[in-house]
Image 1: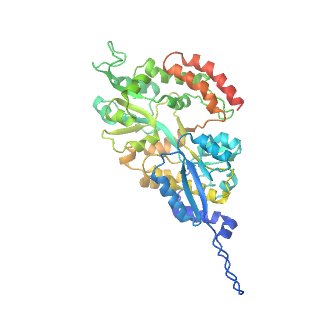
Image 2: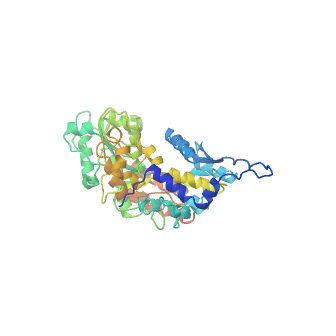
Length: 454
């Protein structure tokens, strides 16, 4: 994969040239007063844009918008923080005829299909930088951003799933830890075996030992939030939604097997607490590792931003593979809403939000991972990546794990209703009331009927 190198100055200068005649006309000086003494035309009022999104973005977003305003005189950008049911509130604004100019994606494919988003394909392809073949990490960016071959948004970044672990526990137990390098990926069976060695009850017994007390475990080998089974469906050669039909694949053998293996971490392998035990523990993932309640935790890459003050030595690693290395990828997209009176200015904002400068604001904390090739060069990573935040070997997550093994996953139209069949079926598997085969063969056709009629 070719990696582009783009400085902020280059991004701005090319952006200025890309505006074309319309931008030149907009920036032309006002006509001087005539000889008859007529007054000059009044100064143009600032264009005011709104960017809508959900809470929790941090000061980086405001810093970015302030920089955008400095670099685009005559345009003001206001952050419209929208707590609560973001999708419902966005739809209410649209119904009232007062949509924000730009917005974080909500049900992206549904909004694109229903004509609620501006088609940005022509603007993107005409842009000398964003339209370049090697600007984004591909093919993932095009896969997530296009609906029926057209672009309606641009991804903010990437986030993925990977392993976090307490490095001191591995050293004390004399076990080689997992690696951030996909070339050194663990198999699922080895992962479970190590988790078994690291799970210990109050009497020093491990799962499989005579007398192991599941009700009195002092340290669990690992934990996976159940929704993150998606990555293991992919790793087992399956799919959650088919890339062409956009129907659920939970009734396929690969998905059924992967779901059952995740459930068996609790039900058979006894290396992970069940939901009731986990809730009773009542700790976040950093605390779980720091108190040695867990040896390993599978979490999102965004959680790196919450590990800065962790006292125990932290390690990270790629997920174990069932059949092939794989991770779920996602992140919100930046979109222009139909109904805006300022399409050109809104494109300037979305373009700015797709710049290396803006993305880098969120990379330094560990909250985001790059979606642009310019940010996975050695020079760029020297700038935004640090051992204090990202830990040893984490460059492999950005340069190999995401680009080579990442699969974008965004729900198709109708997913909200269809998931009403899938999630209860999965819950029955997690607690052992049904096998994955029983639950998913029953639920998937019902869910797919909803998707087909959405």
